[in-house]
Length: 491
Picture 1 (tube, rainbow, N blue to C red):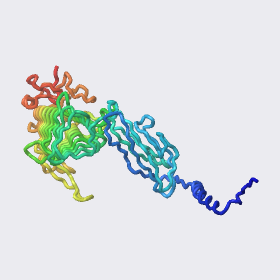
Picture 2: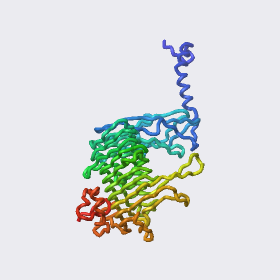
Picture 3: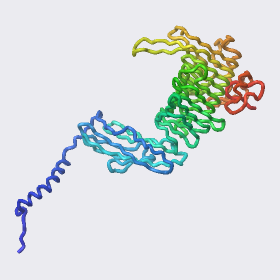
Picture 4: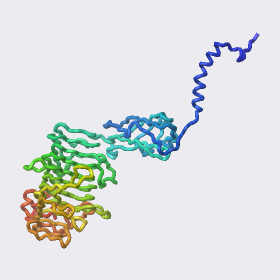
């Protein structure tokens, strides 16, 4: 006879077993039904385990790598993230996975109070594609209650020698075997020499600097110059200033030499700080272009510089600023400024200054420290630009003449000053004219001399004998009368 059991026939032991089986399930069910306490308060924000995910692998072949970061809700309310997405979308080199969901965009993600979630990031790189950017950047963007937050993504897109915020402690030579990418800073310690061979290319990420407390030797050649530029290689950035910090020869740096270099698109091209020796220049610079800076091209501060056959062109403030006194000699140099055809410029092509100001305490009195400008010599040079006055002397503060010497001399030069500017003092101006030098195309950074240039054959040969080779590797001694500036016109 078949016996049918009802629920009331289950004995006590069976009930206990069922109780312990179903109790966790019931607890989980009730917990999952708990009302979400999602806040729409825009002041509540997410926290991240890092603000930048950096892939420190430099790929030499096609490859990929994965990193992750965590997203935290450290608020007392739940939050709903409207969207988590790659800023670069489907064209990005990156892919993301949000808590197990692979997608370039995920919408309406709830993150409980005091909880977190994982975001995995993968990058795919082909380092042998010369069209690949040197630095592959993107970001993961989070939108929550109208707040937009992001985590930066950084990877290296080509086979480069990566210099990531490094300090150089022993003499080193950089070779042209592969590009050098500077991220953050590259610091050369005192009494350490960095030598850079001809043909070497150095690319700097946003705000990156080369800081030299020791010595810098740049050994470029006409056909193989050493180049310094920003790391954005797209056409749009080819002549975009302010992409990187610049070169800083800090106080105490000595015996620096730059030969056949091209330095462009930084904030300040080269800063040369106070010299520590009087018998040798802080910097000797030859056959070099410093152009297109968002602040100053060559910025000297109480230093000693000797320059020949150089082009200093286009800066939003000043092409060459010789400040806080010092000692300077320029031979066959072109100092030009045609910054922003439709944008006003803050300073001249050339500035001379013999003091600095400082405060001992915040909001205290401003103190003036005079510094002698021992000499500033310009021989066979062109100083010109788009403004009426391209040469300024700063030797007064609040109307008071600074008690420091201001010694300068222009010998066989073209100098852009207004018609009423007095250049008759032979102790300061010798064979100086105000003529338009007639550059070929200054608005396109072509500062070679046109056929009818009044700078032709106006130089003094004694200076050309000392510094005979121009920026195009042409001799200034082709005839008895060299041209002014950094370019000798060859008919």
